[in-house]
Image (cartoon, rainbow, N blue to C red):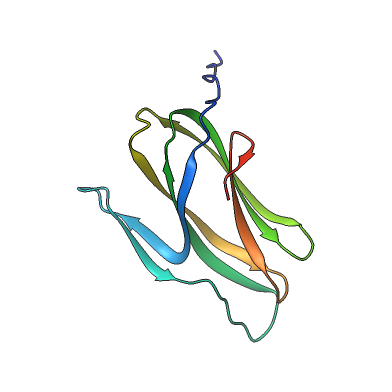
Length: 126
């Protein structure tokens, strides 16, 4: 038996924050997140290098069912180096949602600029 997915929300979420860090931990009692080793520059002696990273995201003004996609892009070429997909259901539009996604080892092929892109229901959030 195949379970049907709910219809995609027409409400476009607001991407309040995105941070890259070494790791993130959610406290099981409070749900608070601790971000460890926040960074935006990677220094390396040689390339390619594997780089573990965790992406923290905060979404607000969202309600309904979302298909999320996170893309790691090499800016110079536009190549998608990694894509991660997931689903999210948000019941209360007045609340916000904290998420973190851990990448055990992203391969950085060469010196340059890279970015994470966040998509919800095929809409670019940032």
